[in-house]
Length: 352
Image 1 (cartoon, one colour):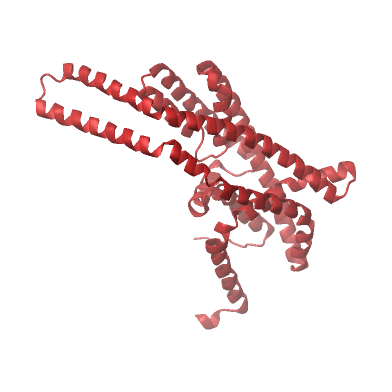
Image 2 (cartoon, rainbow, N blue to C red):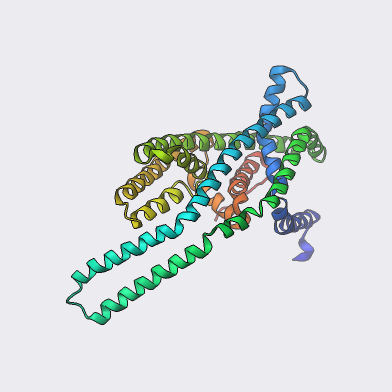
């Protein structure tokens, strides 16, 4: 069988091995560079548009777009980080009092339960009561140990590491934005004319689909933001704006969605005794979930022709293999594969 392999087969095997080694060893430590490259691709149409409208050089256009992007990220990051730190610190300080409230609720519940268990064996009732009390005590102790100001400070002590990665990301982003035309020209010089035409078609198709995907996600997320903002203003206006922004950001991730914020929030309020507010938040979570499930398929179909199921599968597999970066790379690789098939680069007509 080995003798039947041609030079082309050996080349493909060698490339596949290199790709696997790259994914295993290089990709995990290259996340800032990879994210910078894809960000540059997303910003490149804006750079070209600015060049066409103002007739300025690419270097000047790149500098303007980069500064605007930096300003936007800085404003959003400052607002989100400031609010998040304040909320996390307040939550950590209030955790013991919340669990004391739960213990008081348990004692009241235990007294009420005794009225309905008079006819049951005392040993059985005592065993259940002790088991519940042990679980609540263990949960309270675990939360008090994990959610402390010291642990939060330890998390924030890693900020310098993230800051270095962010600086590398910004530098790489600026250089990629400058060098994209040169990188594209060098890549096409390595290809034959026929292959270059196929790759060019695939790139155009990939750019259109990617832009449509981002546009569809953004449009759906705006609807989620509007519904959550209206709902929270009616339910709890004190934190409506902040929590709506958090829900909006989290809801951009299809696998997670707004339920990851509203679900625990509603459950905690129900356990703390605020039944009315907990039920209202649970209803809002169901409404947001229904809105996304109804609107998303239609919007996705109109903009990219990629079904939500395929998007979900690609993001889930990407998450398992590459972590959070897989949320972006998973659908991109799926779209790139389909584009390569349409361009004729990948020929797969196997039938069973």
